[in-house]
Amino acid sequence: MYRNNRISLSSQQGNVYIVAIFVIVVMGMLALNLTRISWSNQDTLTREVLGSQASFLAQSGNEWALTHLFPLDQDDDHDSLVTRCSSLGNDAIGAKNALVANSGVACTAPDISCVYPFEDNEDSVPDELKYIQVSTRAICNDGNVFVVEREETVWVRGVKGE
Image 1: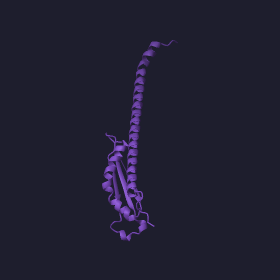
Image 2: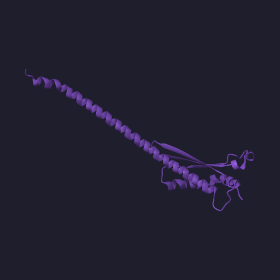
Image 3: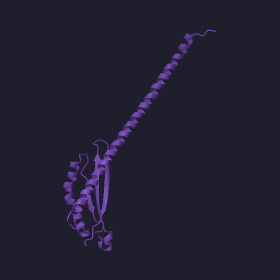
């Protein structure tokens, strides 16, 4: 019994094309999925960096506001803090621009606000519960797609004079 090799080679020739096409399709799908994962990682990293920049800028705004509310060698009682809180908006204009200029990031000027929430019913609230809320909101973007916003809030109380 002798086998005819010509028939077996010609009958297997179409199978090689099918296997080659299958391998090309599978490799193409793998390459496409790896590209998607890579883009996803880049997007996540961009958002993380922008979020960190916005968070640090908001924290810097709060630190500036606290140095405005608690200056050295001045009274830190509640009434003095309320007075400084009301003047914070005018003084913060230059600080906002300086914070962005010195940060080196693509962010808008942070919104620094100081609120005394007990203004309407000050007499009914005990002194130990009165506080001032300092809040800074920073927005950073990459110029194309992503916009990230962070807001940080600090509550402060005055120190009773002796």
